[in-house]
Amino acid sequence: MSLLAVRDLAIARGGLSVIEGLDFTLAPGEALVLRGPNGAGKTTLLRTLAGLQPPLSGQIDCEPDQIAYAGHSDGLKPALTVAENLNFWSAVFGGSAIGPALAAMNLAELAPRPAHRLSAGQKRRLGLARLMVTGRSIWLLDEPTVSLDTASVALFAAMLRGHLANGGAALVATHIDLGLVEARVLDLSGFRADPGRKAARPAGFNEAFA
Image 1: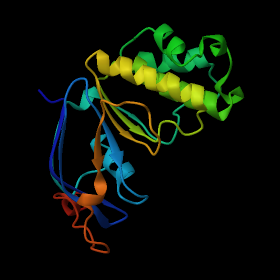
Image 2: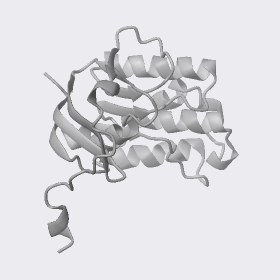
Image 3: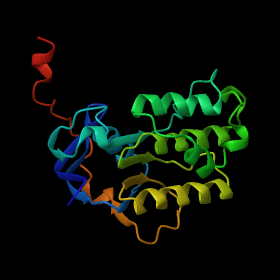
Image 4: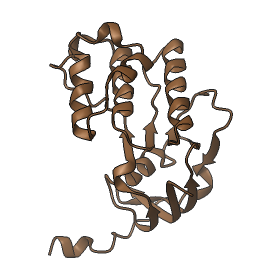
């Protein structure tokens, strides 16, 4: 059984096709690491799977309410404390307890601190801890270890392993080795569209602005 299945997917960035003919599946307990040079379409793919932009063509089979996306922004409210930020996201996604998330990313001692007083690395850890309170099974992660030191990368890798062990799945764009020897690698270089070819607008685009 697959949590996510992608068939013959084509996507674009800035009006130009970047990926075409992409096929893969993601099953419970699986992690898939995206590889490819800058501009290969890793972020565009994750944003498309998260529903933030439409594909050009192809099929994406998954339950939309099972996806949690962590992009380059940490998604924090600066005036709220660490605990208040997690409680906010917990309420949005259904009320999961925040204690395990605080512990997983070593944030318990920072729980009463406002987010605007956190370092870049602490903000990133809080943004990643947010994933645990979503209760969602598919994590889409775009360079999740940016601003993290070695110890924090290890915390994140352990959190990710726990998610996989509980039947979750993850699609991760990263340039570093997370130590997930069980993870599969998907190199997007083999799915690059013809450079410079303008993308056809998705079906229904013109009608939406008629």
